[in-house]
Image (cartoon, rainbow, N blue to C red; front, side, top):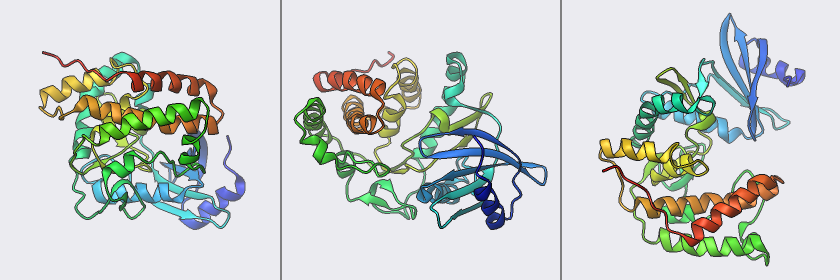
Length: 307
């Protein structure tokens, strides 16, 4: 995938960087990334239509980059046609999702330490709960408001319209939402920084070292168990959840009501993704979500703690 020549020139003119020896790194749902050289030094330029995502990266680096491995944003801008760019130093390494299971198990203690450190960061200058804006302020007055909202700001839909549908989707949404309402009513939590998309392609490692935590577009404030739920939502428990529980026992950070909290947040994620999967016409993913939701609606979550 080539970077459009007009956009290439506009980025050079605005940023002062020369984009030499440019090569495609990869693409997600909302952005593409390219490696390039400037003065023989490697950098990354990302392009997207969502400027707030890059502004939130810059906010995270400014506020927590001293304590967490967050790459700085060296230049960014939005152009008249809606395209935006952000330039950061290039950091060599592998993403967590690219590791073999044995490699993943070796680095998980450090991965969990970084996640725990993330949840301990000072957020005293911010207000609100849930998804934060580019000024670092949460958009909700309470954590329950965030959890009970099944919207996704990057997709144009009204989840309440889906909730009222008289089909399988509507039925699952209503059943799952009722269970989720009951669970969130029994959960009390302190307000912590949460990444909301930690791990996978957003953590870069070199051997046993975490060198970067990327993509802060979804960060906000709430129950830190949400990050654990997000990391383990679509994976067998042996891959993330059980290793984390072992780590948490060793560090005495097993939270109260962990099973209720996991079930509540897994429901939130699956109910939202049930709609998103259909909007994306991803029917294989949709079938997986239906099966997962049916299990979560009918059965409490049970986790196995090591004795």
